[in-house]
Length: 276
Image (cartoon, rainbow, N blue to C red; front, side, top):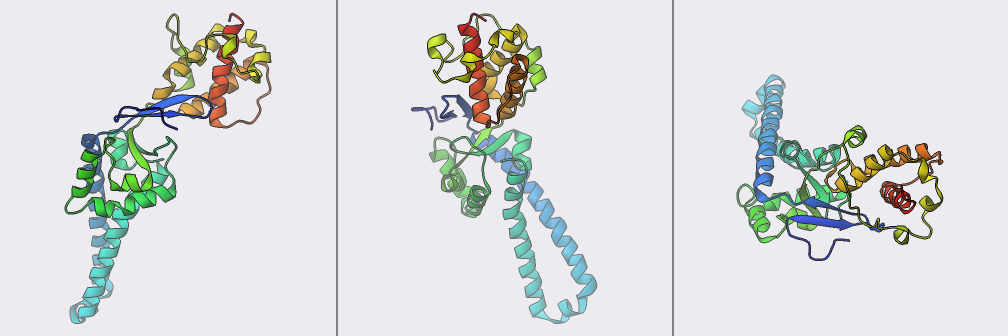
């Protein structure tokens, strides 16, 4: 669920584990630049494919094209279908390949996500790109631009229909960079006030957190402070949990990405509760 009354240019998400993270919503300018790059690539692809088809037709069906007008109609229809398939399929292909990014969005640093913060699926990609044909009217995203001006989060009709949003991509951070980063003094982490903040059923309360070194805890705390800006947040949480549990000699049980991040919070809280 989203937080109460978030700013239009910021999407705030709260998970069931009370882990909050957010995204900066992309503006019209950056989206327009990404669209220009994608459109140029699409036009180049269409030109290349249709030039290839023309050469093939001229080589094998030259007589039919010169003497048969229906053949010319069929050729024009094929060219139209190819252009439509490239224009429509280009975005879907890359959004599935690159997790919500087309080449233009990747170059500008944008990504398409669902409004609940989760990655876009094939169904949503198909919907938002089918409606793109309406957004494109009357000429180069005329309807889409008007809709984005009206909508506080710069969502075009395709985004509204599919329940998606374009946000600025977050920077990936490695586990090694977190470990090497010196922790600032007196860090303030959410929900880490002391024993009272720990859930009674938290497994971390019974673990040997005293085995964790200051280096281990600094790495975990730095991750928690910077998690809202990390594009590889979930994968990094998994790696940090594995490192912490190995240091405590606690067996690693299967867990999903959200559980991993929640467990990092619990381990840091348990260590603080014991004066770590």
